[in-house]
Amino acid sequence: MKDILARLDERREQARLGGGQKRIDAQHAKGKLTARERIEMLLDRDSFEEFDMFVQHRCTDFGMEQEHVPGDGVVTGWGTVNGRTVYVFAKDFTVFGGSLSEEHAKKITKIQDMAIKNRAPIVGLFDAGGARIQEGVAALGGYGEVFQRNVLASGVIPQISVIMGPCAGGDVYSPAMTDFIFMVRETSYMFVTGPDVVKTVTNETVTAEELGGAHVHTTRSSIADRAYENDVEALLQMRRLIDFLPASNLETPPRLPSFDDPDRIDLSLDTLVPDNPNKPYDIKELINKIADEGDFFEIQETHARNIVIGFARIEGTTVGVVANQPLALAGVLDSDASRKAARFVRFCDCFNVPIVTFVDVPGFLPGTAQEYGGLIKHGAKLLFAYAEATVPKVTVITRKAFGGAYDVMASKHLRGDINLAWPTAQIAVMGAKGAVEIIYRRELGDAQKIAQRTKEYEDRFLSPFVAAERGYIDEVIMPHATRKRLSRVLAMLRNKKLENPWKKHDNIPL
Ligand code: HXC
Image 1: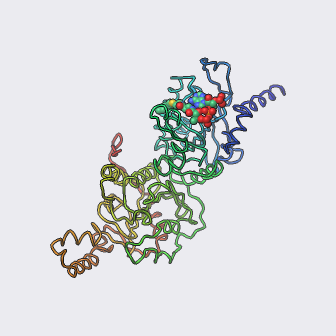
Image 2: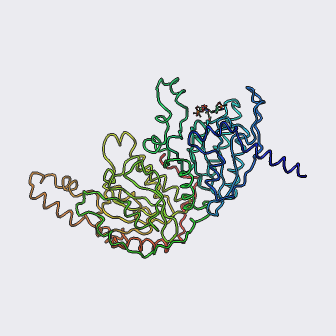
């Protein structure tokens, strides 16, 4: 009997070595952890239960029948993050570069099926070169199975991808269909095909970093939602993110104990908006001041900085925050900002996360670059996302809410539940200068008259009261009481039930 038990230990030990000590050392030398080390870092201590440790590939081409590594390049299973169940798979780069074989795919789809059936988040840790070349179409078929489940899981359970090494092919397309992608600086890359193929096909010479490094994907392409300095930081931040998220679309977000008084007032907010309407201020100051313990998990911090999105808690419960950022492009809505916020609003709506929107927006960005780039369609995405969302929607207008952007930013007309405004709010079709130049065009030569018209316009329209008179604003509130007001209305909206008319699915302007 003892022998049998020892044999199991031996087989486990062998499986845990993956592609061997030499490749593990190479992994460490690059500053990367191994697949199992990563899982240990992500999950609660000793909570990981591994499946399919002894699975092997069945390929017999290219001499593969001689090369078998138990586990076949991916470690899969489940565990807990702060006590809550999470399914996980981690690509093992030390085994055939983490590439996906038919059997490797089956390990992942088993975990995906379990996560969907048992309604818990799934985290994929990627460090892999895509389909296993030696297996050909069997590997492609395997990826197809993974992709199909990514889509079925979308909107049912949170799917999180962390890119922790060079990733290509299916190892970027599968993450692309998940809710969030995070990267590690200088050790992770994402591209459909690597620099060598690029050189052959397009004759471009690029480094892996230039083609698909964390900087590119968190600033230009917006494929990645955030980047971290190293594996450890990335994995610890994933634990923090998971704490914000509900386990599935059937649950409300977790409620964490908070020691921050929900009625806390903050007098500094009364002077946050400068007297000069053209002077910027940092909207993150407001977000940090209304959030429990000032804890804000920002998504896509370095892309489209003119809009800020992320998760915070109020009275212990998660809210999704969307806020125009006057510090960047005066908080204007452009194509990138609209796409960024639209996707986030849809995530929140899928997973019953109430949305708090802070508005200070001078309008949509004019110009050929934006129009040629499809601003109409991208702006419509945000409009569509807010309009279809049925979760509690609370809006606070701090300053400008001009033109179409007023409508878009969770206005009353898009079923905003509670729409609040600070006394500094200016809700109008446009700013005074632009308005006067259009409606008093014939008086433009007379500076005195124009100044008087501008003053009249400012007095009448650049306030929250015209909107409040119509009930488009439910209440004009003191800035210092914003957290208290939000806590109260979010509690009031906790049992909100709203359903859209039945449909197979909508047709958001993609
Ligand atoms: C089999 C692979 C592999 C693959 C890497 N390896 N990718 N084995 N199939 N796809 C193996 C290597 O042979 C090597 O084995 C080990 O993994 C490490 O790879 P290196 O190239 O030495 O590492 P590095 O220089 O860091 O480069 C990593 C890489 C590169 C950028 C991922 O290996 C690469 O470009 N691989 C191919 C990527 C690719 O084109 N994949 C197919 C995509 S098609 P040894 O034994 O030397 O350690 C696809 C279809 C899905 O995925 C459908 C999409 C819609």
